Length: 145
Image (cartoon, rainbow, N blue to C red; front, side, top):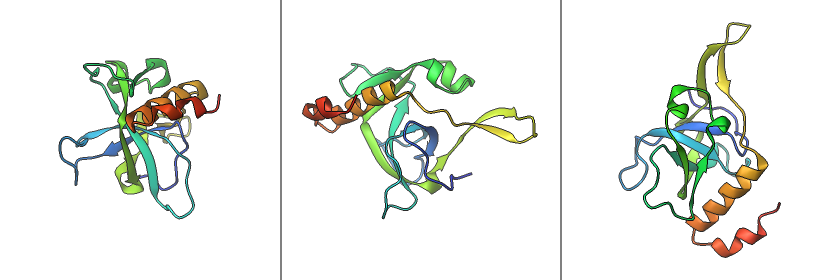
């Protein structure tokens, strides 16, 4: 089910890249990380960066690993490494994005979703990777602490 509100920066969602994308673009159902808050004039659009469970070969300055402890405690996210692909940035419509289902129900019997966000420190590192992926690495020093 598609999201209906703008997610917060640092939140991990699932994105459906299967329709309208083809290689070398992302073209699967895969996790993404929200980079920016909602912006006036951009209703129902979210800027995200893609994740991959395949270790880049070679690892470049626009890649960084996300610790498993920061990810949902489900098999998909825990069975292998997860890497940010800082060169794979997208402005995606809400209709492509889903919350991550945890496979458990809360005390009220309702389905639970992963809503935690990455830490400020990890997001700073990821913003640096994204700037490197845009070939704007000289701007990394301007990312606030």
